[in-house]
Image (cartoon, rainbow, N blue to C red):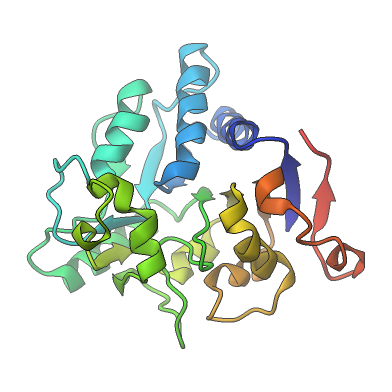
Length: 259
């Protein structure tokens, strides 16, 4: 696990976008896993700018989104599909049929989860997976629990997670769906490379648990310590004094220079 500290959230987003653009140049048929949420907005804005400058070509790539709320139509402006359409897909040259989502309105949600796992396998797995980090340490919508689910599954959302998504629902936490479909831990840890971006002071505790804490289902992101190729990009606010004491231990991740 390598950590890069950036001076601002915007700089962290630019750094993550540069990694994606570079991988697209090396692997035009990239299978790219994508998150949603406020942290990802800076990444997608920068990817759109890079595309406009001819530095990010998505024409042969496939994207796979991590999760979707249960009960929302694909065209619902509060859905993650609508978020991705507005934030990235309408701004770059991804081909129709190359963007892949979970259907939160599927008649049979278990069958939908199995379809999604087969889709990932059929594409050969995920080459590069972008992740955000929940305040409670969740990745995707894999919430803290006594056990984590390996496969795509139906997840009950923690209150802190629903609160973090309330902006999409008029600021009303009661309007946020209580459940979602989410990619499981096997597909996440099976990605060939992972870039996780965490910004803001509210993420500092989760960053600490992820990179310096024990591997535990109470902090799902801590399982990224097991992955051979993870880059964590944080800003000053999410980093703070988190690892001042921990970085001296040989088992801790490498810290790269601030940008």
